[in-house]
Image (cartoon, rainbow, N blue to C red; front, side, top):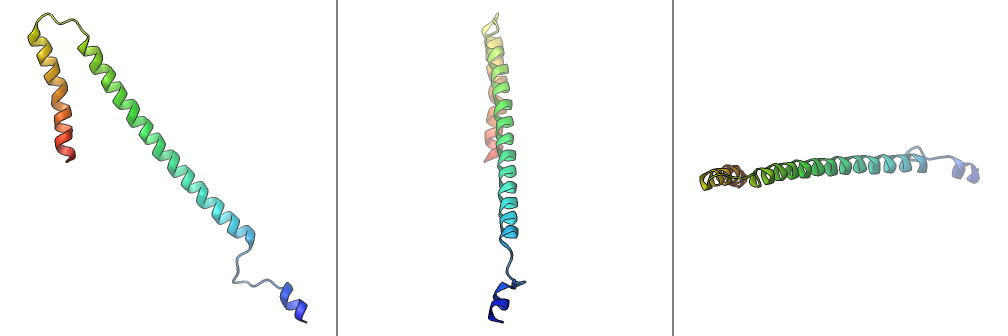
Length: 88
């Protein structure tokens, strides 16, 4: 009789397989979330790089007059300054 009670499973205690599955699902969710964050950062980095590349190409264009160059520099700096002001 004592052996019979030990062999019965307690319904309140989850099985090892269930515990493993829950833990595995949790890790999988965390991995997917981390990938999403990394993907967003990568896209942001690529956008910033494209903006810098476009600005650099504009800078290296031949300018006929210094006023054109000043206008170009001002047009590049204004959005940067505005972004910094609104972020604070």
